[in-house]
Length: 493
Image (cartoon, rainbow, N blue to C red; front, top):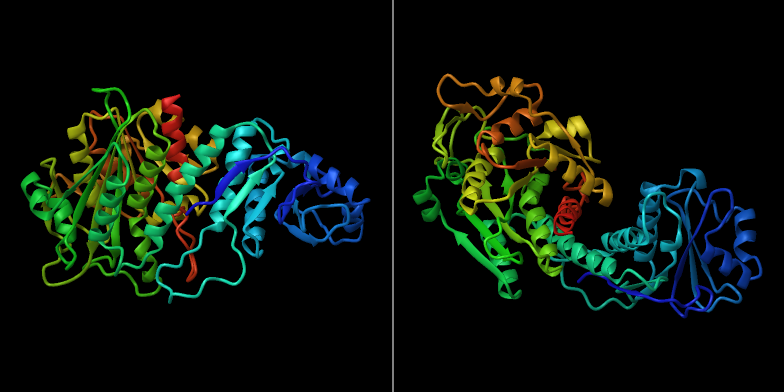
Protein backbone atom coordinates (compact mmCIF):
# COMPACT_ATOMS: atom_id res chain seq x y z
CA UNK A 1 0.00 0.00 0.00
CA UNK A 2 1.18 3.52 -0.77
CA UNK A 3 1.53 6.13 1.93
CA UNK A 4 -1.59 8.03 2.87
CA UNK A 5 -1.23 11.76 2.22
CA UNK A 6 -3.20 14.58 3.84
CA UNK A 7 -3.05 18.35 4.47
CA UNK A 8 -3.04 20.39 7.67
CA UNK A 9 -2.69 24.04 8.66
CA UNK A 10 -1.50 23.34 12.21
CA UNK A 11 1.65 25.39 13.03
CA UNK A 12 4.79 23.20 13.12
CA UNK A 13 5.56 23.95 16.76
CA UNK A 14 2.02 22.96 17.78
CA UNK A 15 1.49 19.74 15.82
CA UNK A 16 1.33 16.56 17.88
CA UNK A 17 2.78 14.56 14.99
CA UNK A 18 5.48 12.06 16.01
CA UNK A 19 7.93 13.92 13.77
CA UNK A 20 7.96 17.32 12.07
CA UNK A 21 10.26 17.95 9.10
CA UNK A 22 11.84 21.35 8.42
CA UNK A 23 14.68 22.66 6.28
CA UNK A 24 17.87 24.64 6.89
CA UNK A 25 20.36 26.13 4.42
CA UNK A 26 24.11 25.68 4.74
CA UNK A 27 24.60 29.29 5.90
CA UNK A 28 22.32 28.65 8.87
CA UNK A 29 19.28 30.44 7.46
CA UNK A 30 16.08 28.56 8.05
CA UNK A 31 12.78 27.83 6.35
CA UNK A 32 9.74 29.57 7.82
CA UNK A 33 8.75 26.41 9.70
CA UNK A 34 12.28 25.92 11.05
CA UNK A 35 12.29 29.55 12.20
CA UNK A 36 9.06 28.94 14.15
CA UNK A 37 10.52 25.78 15.69
CA UNK A 38 13.68 27.66 16.60
CA UNK A 39 11.73 30.51 18.21
CA UNK A 40 9.44 28.19 20.18
CA UNK A 41 12.45 26.18 21.43
CA UNK A 42 14.37 29.29 22.57
CA UNK A 43 16.92 29.13 19.74
CA UNK A 44 17.63 25.39 19.90
CA UNK A 45 18.13 24.94 16.13
CA UNK A 46 20.48 27.91 15.91
CA UNK A 47 22.59 26.52 18.77
CA UNK A 48 22.68 23.08 17.17
CA UNK A 49 23.86 24.61 13.88
CA UNK A 50 26.54 26.68 15.62
CA UNK A 51 27.78 23.61 17.50
CA UNK A 52 28.06 21.61 14.28
CA UNK A 53 25.29 19.15 15.12
CA UNK A 54 23.48 20.41 12.03
CA UNK A 55 25.61 20.82 8.89
CA UNK A 56 22.66 21.71 6.62
CA UNK A 57 24.63 20.28 3.68
CA UNK A 58 22.33 19.29 0.82
CA UNK A 59 21.33 15.66 1.25
CA UNK A 60 22.06 15.59 4.99
CA UNK A 61 19.60 15.26 7.84
CA UNK A 62 19.64 15.44 11.63
CA UNK A 63 17.02 14.20 14.07
CA UNK A 64 16.44 15.82 17.49
CA UNK A 65 14.26 14.58 20.28
CA UNK A 66 12.22 16.38 22.91
CA UNK A 67 13.03 19.99 22.04
CA UNK A 68 11.63 22.25 24.72
CA UNK A 69 8.51 24.15 23.65
CA UNK A 70 7.80 21.81 20.71
CA UNK A 71 4.80 19.50 20.92
CA UNK A 72 6.19 16.96 18.45
CA UNK A 73 8.55 14.42 19.95
CA UNK A 74 10.98 14.65 17.04
CA UNK A 75 12.25 17.39 14.76
CA UNK A 76 13.93 16.26 11.55
CA UNK A 77 16.13 18.98 10.05
CA UNK A 78 16.92 18.39 6.38
CA UNK A 79 19.92 20.10 4.83
CA UNK A 80 19.10 22.32 1.85
CA UNK A 81 22.62 23.35 0.84
CA UNK A 82 23.37 26.79 -0.61
CA UNK A 83 20.29 28.97 -0.81
CA UNK A 84 21.35 30.53 -4.11
CA UNK A 85 21.66 27.07 -5.70
CA UNK A 86 18.45 25.62 -4.31
CA UNK A 87 16.50 24.48 -7.37
CA UNK A 88 14.06 21.72 -8.34
CA UNK A 89 16.74 19.01 -8.26
CA UNK A 90 17.91 20.19 -4.84
CA UNK A 91 14.35 20.17 -3.53
CA UNK A 92 13.89 16.62 -4.78
CA UNK A 93 17.14 15.53 -3.15
CA UNK A 94 16.09 17.10 0.16
CA UNK A 95 12.69 15.40 -0.07
CA UNK A 96 14.32 12.05 -0.80
CA UNK A 97 16.62 12.45 2.19
CA UNK A 98 13.61 13.22 4.38
CA UNK A 99 11.97 10.02 3.13
CA UNK A 100 15.10 7.99 3.79
CA UNK A 101 15.36 9.33 7.34
CA UNK A 102 11.68 8.72 8.06
CA UNK A 103 11.96 5.09 6.96
CA UNK A 104 14.45 4.48 9.76
CA UNK A 105 12.20 5.92 12.49
CA UNK A 106 9.72 3.83 14.54
CA UNK A 107 6.77 6.06 13.71
CA UNK A 108 3.51 5.61 11.78
CA UNK A 109 3.08 9.22 10.69
CA UNK A 110 4.98 12.47 10.23
CA UNK A 111 4.40 16.08 9.21
CA UNK A 112 6.42 17.70 6.44
CA UNK A 113 6.88 21.45 6.15
CA UNK A 114 9.11 21.26 3.06
CA UNK A 115 6.34 22.42 0.70
CA UNK A 116 6.80 26.00 1.94
CA UNK A 117 10.33 26.19 0.47
CA UNK A 118 10.80 28.53 -2.48
CA UNK A 119 11.78 26.73 -5.68
CA UNK A 120 12.25 28.74 -8.87
CA UNK A 121 9.69 28.03 -11.61
CA UNK A 122 7.88 25.44 -9.49
CA UNK A 123 4.51 25.94 -7.85
CA UNK A 124 3.08 24.59 -4.60
CA UNK A 125 1.37 21.69 -6.37
CA UNK A 126 4.67 20.53 -7.87
CA UNK A 127 6.42 20.71 -4.48
CA UNK A 128 3.62 18.82 -2.77
CA UNK A 129 3.59 16.04 -5.34
CA UNK A 130 7.37 15.78 -5.48
CA UNK A 131 7.73 15.57 -1.70
CA UNK A 132 4.97 12.96 -1.48
CA UNK A 133 6.48 10.76 -4.19
CA UNK A 134 9.94 11.03 -2.66
CA UNK A 135 8.59 9.85 0.69
CA UNK A 136 6.72 6.95 -0.87
CA UNK A 137 9.78 5.92 -2.86
CA UNK A 138 11.65 5.28 0.40
CA UNK A 139 8.64 3.90 2.28
CA UNK A 140 8.38 1.02 -0.21
CA UNK A 141 9.65 -2.28 1.18
CA UNK A 142 10.15 -5.46 -0.80
CA UNK A 143 8.99 -8.40 1.32
CA UNK A 144 7.39 -10.85 -1.14
CA UNK A 145 10.00 -13.60 -0.98
CA UNK A 146 11.17 -13.34 2.63
CA UNK A 147 10.14 -15.77 5.34
CA UNK A 148 6.93 -14.46 6.96
CA UNK A 149 7.74 -12.50 10.09
CA UNK A 150 5.76 -11.47 13.12
CA UNK A 151 4.32 -7.99 13.04
CA UNK A 152 7.13 -5.51 13.79
CA UNK A 153 7.23 -4.34 17.39
CA UNK A 154 7.83 -0.79 16.22
CA UNK A 155 5.61 1.26 13.93
CA UNK A 156 6.38 1.87 10.26
CA UNK A 157 5.55 4.98 8.32
CA UNK A 158 2.00 4.80 6.93
CA UNK A 159 0.95 8.41 6.47
CA UNK A 160 2.45 11.81 5.78
CA UNK A 161 0.83 15.17 6.52
CA UNK A 162 1.84 18.32 4.64
CA UNK A 163 1.48 21.80 6.11
CA UNK A 164 -0.64 23.18 3.30
CA UNK A 165 -4.34 23.79 2.84
CA UNK A 166 -4.38 23.80 -0.96
CA UNK A 167 -3.69 21.52 -3.91
CA UNK A 168 -5.72 18.46 -3.02
CA UNK A 169 -5.48 17.54 -6.70
CA UNK A 170 -1.69 17.37 -6.36
CA UNK A 171 -2.07 14.85 -3.53
CA UNK A 172 -4.44 12.76 -5.65
CA UNK A 173 -1.89 12.78 -8.46
CA UNK A 174 0.89 11.83 -6.05
CA UNK A 175 -1.10 8.92 -4.65
CA UNK A 176 -1.99 7.64 -8.13
CA UNK A 177 1.57 7.94 -9.47
CA UNK A 178 2.89 6.29 -6.29
CA UNK A 179 0.49 3.37 -6.86
CA UNK A 180 1.75 2.98 -10.42
CA UNK A 181 5.38 3.20 -9.36
CA UNK A 182 4.88 0.58 -6.67
CA UNK A 183 3.06 -1.71 -9.09
CA UNK A 184 5.99 -1.46 -11.51
CA UNK A 185 8.63 -1.83 -8.80
CA UNK A 186 7.03 -4.93 -7.31
CA UNK A 187 6.84 -6.66 -10.69
CA UNK A 188 10.45 -5.72 -11.40
CA UNK A 189 11.74 -6.89 -8.03
CA UNK A 190 10.04 -10.28 -8.01
CA UNK A 191 12.28 -13.22 -9.01
CA UNK A 192 11.80 -14.74 -12.46
CA UNK A 193 10.59 -18.07 -11.09
CA UNK A 194 7.54 -16.12 -9.81
CA UNK A 195 7.23 -13.20 -12.21
CA UNK A 196 7.06 -15.10 -15.48
CA UNK A 197 4.81 -14.25 -18.44
CA UNK A 198 1.82 -16.01 -16.87
CA UNK A 199 2.24 -14.03 -13.64
CA UNK A 200 2.24 -10.71 -15.50
CA UNK A 201 -0.93 -11.82 -17.28
CA UNK A 202 -2.55 -12.83 -13.98
CA UNK A 203 -1.68 -9.52 -12.31
CA UNK A 204 -3.08 -7.61 -15.26
CA UNK A 205 -6.33 -9.56 -15.21
CA UNK A 206 -6.63 -9.06 -11.45
CA UNK A 207 -6.22 -5.31 -11.85
CA UNK A 208 -8.87 -5.21 -14.57
CA UNK A 209 -11.27 -7.26 -12.45
CA UNK A 210 -10.92 -4.84 -9.53
CA UNK A 211 -11.37 -1.60 -11.51
CA UNK A 212 -14.52 -0.59 -13.34
CA UNK A 213 -13.99 0.48 -16.92
CA UNK A 214 -10.83 -1.61 -17.45
CA UNK A 215 -10.77 -4.46 -19.97
CA UNK A 216 -8.05 -7.09 -20.22
CA UNK A 217 -7.31 -9.54 -23.02
CA UNK A 218 -4.50 -12.10 -22.98
CA UNK A 219 -3.18 -13.37 -26.32
CA UNK A 220 -1.79 -16.90 -26.06
CA UNK A 221 0.81 -18.56 -28.28
CA UNK A 222 -1.90 -19.88 -30.61
CA UNK A 223 -3.38 -16.39 -31.01
CA UNK A 224 0.04 -14.97 -31.87
CA UNK A 225 0.67 -17.75 -34.36
CA UNK A 226 -2.56 -16.87 -36.17
CA UNK A 227 -1.47 -13.21 -36.26
CA UNK A 228 1.91 -14.14 -37.74
CA UNK A 229 4.06 -12.89 -34.83
CA UNK A 230 7.03 -14.95 -35.97
CA UNK A 231 9.58 -12.60 -34.44
CA UNK A 232 8.13 -12.54 -30.90
CA UNK A 233 7.41 -16.27 -30.95
CA UNK A 234 10.97 -17.09 -32.01
CA UNK A 235 12.33 -15.45 -28.86
CA UNK A 236 9.98 -17.54 -26.71
CA UNK A 237 10.85 -20.89 -28.28
CA UNK A 238 13.63 -21.83 -25.88
CA UNK A 239 11.53 -21.38 -22.74
CA UNK A 240 9.17 -23.76 -20.95
CA UNK A 241 7.13 -20.66 -19.99
CA UNK A 242 4.79 -19.79 -22.87
CA UNK A 243 4.63 -16.15 -24.05
CA UNK A 244 1.73 -13.84 -23.23
CA UNK A 245 0.67 -10.65 -24.94
CA UNK A 246 -1.24 -8.62 -22.37
CA UNK A 247 -3.67 -6.00 -23.68
CA UNK A 248 -5.30 -3.61 -21.18
CA UNK A 249 -7.84 -0.98 -22.24
CA UNK A 250 -9.17 2.12 -20.46
CA UNK A 251 -11.90 4.00 -22.30
CA UNK A 252 -11.96 7.19 -20.27
CA UNK A 253 -12.10 9.49 -23.28
CA UNK A 254 -14.87 10.27 -25.71
CA UNK A 255 -16.26 7.44 -27.80
CA UNK A 256 -14.37 7.09 -31.05
CA UNK A 257 -11.39 9.17 -29.91
CA UNK A 258 -8.10 7.62 -30.96
CA UNK A 259 -6.24 6.01 -28.04
CA UNK A 260 -2.72 6.44 -26.79
CA UNK A 261 -1.02 3.03 -26.92
CA UNK A 262 1.76 2.13 -24.49
CA UNK A 263 3.93 -0.86 -25.42
CA UNK A 264 6.38 -2.45 -22.99
CA UNK A 265 9.17 -4.99 -23.35
CA UNK A 266 8.54 -7.77 -20.84
CA UNK A 267 11.47 -10.21 -21.03
CA UNK A 268 10.90 -11.81 -17.63
CA UNK A 269 14.39 -13.29 -17.71
CA UNK A 270 17.06 -12.81 -20.34
CA UNK A 271 19.86 -15.35 -20.55
CA UNK A 272 20.80 -14.00 -23.96
CA UNK A 273 19.55 -17.25 -25.51
CA UNK A 274 22.07 -19.14 -27.65
CA UNK A 275 24.23 -15.98 -27.59
CA UNK A 276 24.56 -16.59 -23.86
CA UNK A 277 25.38 -13.67 -21.59
CA UNK A 278 28.37 -13.82 -19.23
CA UNK A 279 27.45 -15.31 -15.86
CA UNK A 280 28.58 -12.30 -13.82
CA UNK A 281 25.65 -9.98 -13.29
CA UNK A 282 23.15 -12.19 -15.12
CA UNK A 283 20.92 -12.18 -12.02
CA UNK A 284 20.02 -8.60 -12.88
CA UNK A 285 18.33 -9.80 -16.06
CA UNK A 286 15.12 -10.38 -14.09
CA UNK A 287 14.78 -6.61 -14.55
CA UNK A 288 14.59 -7.00 -18.34
CA UNK A 289 10.79 -6.81 -18.05
CA UNK A 290 10.83 -3.32 -16.52
CA UNK A 291 9.62 -1.75 -19.75
CA UNK A 292 6.41 -3.76 -19.50
CA UNK A 293 6.25 -3.13 -15.75
CA UNK A 294 6.61 0.62 -16.32
CA UNK A 295 3.85 0.69 -18.92
CA UNK A 296 1.55 -1.34 -16.68
CA UNK A 297 2.37 1.02 -13.81
CA UNK A 298 1.55 4.03 -15.98
CA UNK A 299 -1.77 2.38 -16.88
CA UNK A 300 -2.48 1.87 -13.15
CA UNK A 301 -1.79 5.55 -12.44
CA UNK A 302 -3.98 6.73 -15.32
CA UNK A 303 -6.90 4.54 -14.20
CA UNK A 304 -6.62 5.61 -10.57
CA UNK A 305 -6.73 9.23 -11.73
CA UNK A 306 -9.66 8.37 -14.01
CA UNK A 307 -7.98 10.36 -16.77
CA UNK A 308 -10.39 11.37 -19.57
CA UNK A 309 -8.40 9.58 -22.23
CA UNK A 310 -8.61 6.35 -24.21
CA UNK A 311 -5.59 4.26 -23.32
CA UNK A 312 -4.27 0.87 -24.39
CA UNK A 313 -1.36 -0.87 -22.69
CA UNK A 314 0.38 -3.79 -24.40
CA UNK A 315 2.89 -5.85 -22.42
CA UNK A 316 4.87 -8.37 -24.46
CA UNK A 317 5.82 -10.97 -21.83
CA UNK A 318 8.40 -13.55 -22.95
CA UNK A 319 11.33 -15.46 -21.45
CA UNK A 320 14.56 -15.73 -23.48
CA UNK A 321 16.19 -19.11 -22.75
CA UNK A 322 18.57 -21.49 -24.58
CA UNK A 323 17.49 -25.04 -25.35
CA UNK A 324 17.26 -27.41 -28.32
CA UNK A 325 14.31 -25.49 -29.73
CA UNK A 326 15.74 -22.01 -29.18
CA UNK A 327 16.18 -19.66 -32.10
CA UNK A 328 19.73 -19.22 -33.42
CA UNK A 329 22.07 -16.63 -34.85
CA UNK A 330 21.59 -16.65 -38.66
CA UNK A 331 17.90 -17.61 -38.39
CA UNK A 332 15.61 -15.51 -40.59
CA UNK A 333 12.30 -14.61 -38.93
CA UNK A 334 9.11 -13.28 -40.47
CA UNK A 335 7.53 -10.57 -38.34
CA UNK A 336 3.82 -9.77 -38.10
CA UNK A 337 4.44 -6.83 -40.44
CA UNK A 338 5.73 -9.22 -43.11
CA UNK A 339 9.27 -7.87 -42.90
CA UNK A 340 11.95 -10.53 -42.53
CA UNK A 341 14.69 -10.26 -39.93
CA UNK A 342 18.13 -11.84 -39.92
CA UNK A 343 19.17 -12.79 -36.39
CA UNK A 344 22.80 -11.85 -35.80
CA UNK A 345 22.62 -12.20 -32.02
CA UNK A 346 19.88 -13.81 -29.93
CA UNK A 347 20.67 -11.38 -27.09
CA UNK A 348 19.23 -8.55 -29.20
CA UNK A 349 15.82 -10.03 -28.44
CA UNK A 350 13.92 -7.08 -26.99
CA UNK A 351 13.50 -5.44 -30.38
CA UNK A 352 12.28 -8.75 -31.79
CA UNK A 353 9.33 -8.96 -29.41
CA UNK A 354 8.66 -5.22 -29.60
CA UNK A 355 8.45 -5.10 -33.39
CA UNK A 356 5.50 -7.51 -33.38
CA UNK A 357 3.88 -5.76 -30.41
CA UNK A 358 4.24 -2.41 -32.20
CA UNK A 359 2.65 -3.85 -35.33
CA UNK A 360 -0.21 -5.23 -33.23
CA UNK A 361 -0.65 -1.80 -31.59
CA UNK A 362 -1.57 -0.32 -34.95
CA UNK A 363 -4.87 -2.24 -35.03
CA UNK A 364 -6.20 0.26 -32.47
CA UNK A 365 -5.72 3.17 -34.91
CA UNK A 366 -3.72 5.04 -32.25
CA UNK A 367 -3.20 8.76 -31.88
CA UNK A 368 0.30 8.00 -30.64
CA UNK A 369 2.37 4.91 -29.77
CA UNK A 370 5.06 5.00 -27.07
CA UNK A 371 7.24 2.03 -26.18
CA UNK A 372 9.57 1.56 -23.23
CA UNK A 373 12.26 -1.08 -22.98
CA UNK A 374 15.44 -1.98 -21.16
CA UNK A 375 16.78 -2.29 -24.66
CA UNK A 376 20.51 -1.63 -24.88
CA UNK A 377 23.60 -1.49 -22.74
CA UNK A 378 24.77 1.11 -25.25
CA UNK A 379 22.20 3.54 -23.85
CA UNK A 380 23.66 3.08 -20.36
CA UNK A 381 27.13 3.78 -21.74
CA UNK A 382 25.86 6.93 -23.46
CA UNK A 383 23.64 8.39 -20.72
CA UNK A 384 24.50 6.57 -17.50
CA UNK A 385 21.85 5.92 -14.85
CA UNK A 386 20.20 9.34 -14.71
CA UNK A 387 18.45 9.83 -18.05
CA UNK A 388 16.40 7.53 -20.25
CA UNK A 389 17.13 7.63 -23.97
CA UNK A 390 14.32 9.14 -26.07
CA UNK A 391 14.06 8.52 -29.79
CA UNK A 392 11.37 9.79 -32.12
CA UNK A 393 11.04 11.56 -35.44
CA UNK A 394 8.05 13.56 -34.18
CA UNK A 395 9.27 16.95 -32.93
CA UNK A 396 6.08 17.77 -31.03
CA UNK A 397 5.99 14.39 -29.30
CA UNK A 398 9.66 14.71 -28.37
CA UNK A 399 9.05 18.12 -26.79
CA UNK A 400 6.02 16.83 -24.86
CA UNK A 401 7.89 13.84 -23.44
CA UNK A 402 11.01 15.83 -22.58
CA UNK A 403 8.86 18.45 -20.85
CA UNK A 404 7.04 15.79 -18.82
CA UNK A 405 10.37 14.29 -17.82
CA UNK A 406 11.80 17.63 -16.75
CA UNK A 407 8.65 18.40 -14.77
CA UNK A 408 8.78 15.15 -12.82
CA UNK A 409 12.59 14.89 -12.75
CA UNK A 410 12.13 11.48 -14.39
CA UNK A 411 14.19 12.86 -17.21
CA UNK A 412 14.98 11.68 -20.71
CA UNK A 413 17.56 12.84 -23.26
CA UNK A 414 16.90 12.78 -26.97
CA UNK A 415 19.07 10.70 -29.27
CA UNK A 416 18.95 11.03 -33.09
CA UNK A 417 17.05 8.73 -35.44
CA UNK A 418 18.70 9.97 -38.62
CA UNK A 419 18.39 7.94 -41.79
CA UNK A 420 22.17 7.71 -41.97
CA UNK A 421 22.08 5.15 -39.14
CA UNK A 422 19.65 2.84 -40.95
CA UNK A 423 22.30 1.35 -43.24
CA UNK A 424 23.91 -0.32 -40.22
CA UNK A 425 20.92 -2.70 -40.22
CA UNK A 426 21.39 -3.85 -43.82
CA UNK A 427 21.35 -7.61 -44.35
CA UNK A 428 22.27 -9.83 -47.30
CA UNK A 429 19.66 -12.41 -46.26
CA UNK A 430 16.62 -10.50 -44.97
CA UNK A 431 14.89 -7.13 -45.04
CA UNK A 432 16.70 -6.07 -41.86
CA UNK A 433 19.26 -7.39 -39.38
CA UNK A 434 18.54 -7.37 -35.66
CA UNK A 435 21.90 -5.84 -34.79
CA UNK A 436 23.61 -2.75 -36.10
CA UNK A 437 27.28 -3.15 -35.24
CA UNK A 438 29.48 -1.86 -32.45
CA UNK A 439 28.75 1.90 -32.74
CA UNK A 440 25.58 3.77 -31.78
CA UNK A 441 23.87 0.63 -30.52
CA UNK A 442 21.00 2.44 -28.76
CA UNK A 443 20.30 4.47 -31.89
CA UNK A 444 20.41 1.55 -34.33
CA UNK A 445 18.04 -0.36 -32.02
CA UNK A 446 15.67 2.61 -32.22
CA UNK A 447 16.12 2.63 -36.01
CA UNK A 448 15.13 -1.04 -36.09
CA UNK A 449 11.89 -0.30 -34.21
CA UNK A 450 11.16 2.70 -36.43
CA UNK A 451 10.79 0.34 -39.40
CA UNK A 452 7.70 -1.13 -37.72
CA UNK A 453 5.97 2.18 -36.93
CA UNK A 454 5.92 3.86 -40.34
CA UNK A 455 3.00 6.24 -40.71
CA UNK A 456 2.33 6.53 -36.97
CA UNK A 457 3.32 9.04 -34.31
CA UNK A 458 5.74 6.99 -32.24
CA UNK A 459 8.41 7.42 -29.58
CA UNK A 460 10.81 4.96 -28.00
CA UNK A 461 12.22 5.17 -24.46
CA UNK A 462 15.33 3.12 -23.71
CA UNK A 463 15.26 2.73 -19.92
CA UNK A 464 18.14 0.26 -19.59
CA UNK A 465 20.00 2.69 -17.34
CA UNK A 466 17.09 4.03 -15.32
CA UNK A 467 14.80 1.07 -14.62
CA UNK A 468 16.74 -0.36 -11.69
CA UNK A 469 19.61 0.37 -9.35
CA UNK A 470 22.64 -1.82 -10.00
CA UNK A 471 24.23 -4.12 -7.48
CA UNK A 472 23.24 -7.17 -5.47
CA UNK A 473 20.75 -5.17 -3.41
CA UNK A 474 19.57 -2.90 -6.20
CA UNK A 475 15.82 -2.46 -6.61
CA UNK A 476 13.58 -1.51 -9.51
CA UNK A 477 12.92 2.25 -9.66
CA UNK A 478 9.48 2.34 -11.29
CA UNK A 479 10.67 4.65 -14.04
CA UNK A 480 9.30 5.86 -16.47
CA UNK A 481 5.91 5.87 -14.67
CA UNK A 482 6.22 9.51 -13.45
CA UNK A 483 7.30 10.79 -16.88
CA UNK A 484 4.56 9.01 -18.81
CA UNK A 485 1.81 9.73 -16.29
CA UNK A 486 2.68 13.42 -16.46
CA UNK A 487 2.61 13.22 -20.26
CA UNK A 488 -0.91 11.77 -20.09
CA UNK A 489 -2.01 14.38 -17.53
CA UNK A 490 -0.71 17.14 -19.79
CA UNK A 491 -2.56 15.70 -22.77
CA UNK A 492 -5.81 15.67 -20.80
CA UNK A 493 -5.27 19.25 -19.69
